Length: 331
Image 1 (cartoon, rainbow, N blue to C red):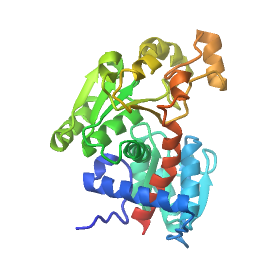
Image 2 (cartoon, rainbow, N blue to C red):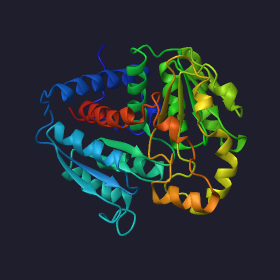
Image 3 (cartoon, rainbow, N blue to C red):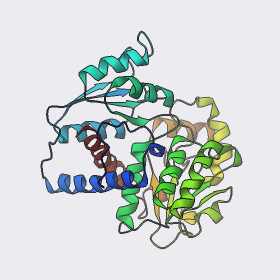
């Protein structure tokens, strides 16, 4: 039986079967081939979508806008000051207004409950562009990138997340690895491990797919023989700047370095969802260098700019995988 997810929202990958995720990845690959070959694919002409952002972003906004235009849709962007949602208008009321004007709604914000409530009341598909708990569109881009680097044979590969493994990216990565049969390793201090409820949800899924889930505080043990080493910023958007000192003390031992990458399996790659603090060429990077004396944070510049890095492939793949999600849920 074929996969059909038309009309569904895309809020977290726990909601989707392995077959459905694989369908979205295959569709993403087809769209990427068409985009690169210059083949028009305006399959959703006449439809309109709205991008509702509480948290700003470069990749998420651009990926949704370009993907929407490629599919022939009209795209409206509402920045954090561009709507009354949560201020003068409830989330439910906002959802019912937007659902009568648009065919789909993207939300990038803070609370997972907010995107769930949008989906409950909108009457049209809602796509999670990031919340504090989950980042499902990033995961599809990440897996497509891994597939491309391992000839689409990813079952049994080992993916290591280094650093703050309790954040939305690490949580989501654990889920997609469990669903697709990849071994997941969370490596960081004990205070930064994934929440127990996420582990409990993923363990039976991993057992069914033949994958493993490992939690460790040892970077050498984690990276030895790994196929993918993944990291993220140490302080996420929306967290207070006051915690930088604490996070630097906790997470500096988990910086991804050339020494750690040398321990990975042959062909092992480095991934990062971006933005990355690998130098001092940003205002945040410069500020941290002045205050704490660090010129690199979660990843060394040598790794980020090195031959094993696939971070810009991931960034591009956000567009292709988001296109697949929108097409599959709106067609």
